[in-house]
Image (spheres, rainbow, N blue to C red):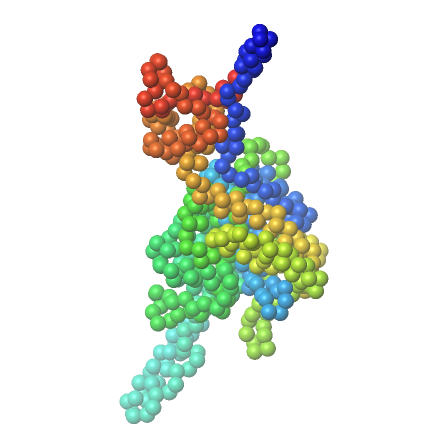
Length: 502
């Protein structure tokens, strides 16, 4: 009997009333995938790494800018086609997600600078066109005045007035060639796209404001215009300043690039499921620690490469109409793509809402990215002047790998974590505070009043967060308050000593 009692006492001494705490409470977000930079080819993979190090930012943000600006540089000059009945423009929409200090802008700047440098090269030609236009405008005014006199003289003697000569009509002012714009209103785009049939890139440092204002002030009409702008379809824009003179855009193609804070992403993804958010490729990497850079991107080499893309022109059909050239998949590329497409389709089982919409856009993303990658490989070979005549199997495989290894998990990260339940977010904030402050016990009222934690300002929110941490083994309700008085409301909680090193 004494031996049995001793065993019971020894077991009681070894008993640990606290479970191991669930440390996943600290991070409510899924880990981001690694961006597969090697898929962009040897030149651009090195350039991306150099630019990212120079900016002190994740490589993902630089890649987002490069892919999107390359797509805009190709524009309507070339469309991708896996087979005859399917064509896609190179239009890409990319959203860089991160906190204000994540390095989004410094990472995007090197690529954006390339685009603006190329725009600056086109300015002298535009200025020359303006001078020629000014001369033609003066000549047209002189011809119009002469015609008016002749018409007046004819009217005075009862003769029919002469027809207005063609040289009396004031010519339209030349439109400056653009690659990057920041004004997203239909009126502004109408003016830009009238002289830029290749399309352009809309850059917005803060995408959430643009997406929010789209419905708040302009109604569904502007949102519908942007849905069309992704597909490169024919579109008629009614110009407010030119009443009665709508502008027909043959191919409304606008790439989109910008940044967004995680807390605003929920607002965007919470909009009507018309596929607007599904059109975006999301880039939400983990932040990188600050470090002094040892290398920087070769801006000159990248500018020469990108110039090959901006120099691509529209082609002329048999009727003399400017249009895009269709770049078809090779037979083996089309076979691979169809096989991937079937596998991808089977993976959609059980998806609903925004997740299903995003999944459904991925085949189109592969078609677009395949052409962009093919041309990025080509333009980076400065000795190769022969433009690709087809989209290769290698390019389609690379695009599919990019979608499978990065786009899909990153989209799941954005969709799954942007609208995290308030209690989960509050529990994570409380868990981080516990590790930082290391208290032996906490009082919920004091947490609410003095801790200053985001989302934990109301009693109900603090109680829900504490309940989450109890379930995760971080906290346990204390039956008595500090000082030994009965815990009437039981708002005191003991902290798991394993979190304190005990």
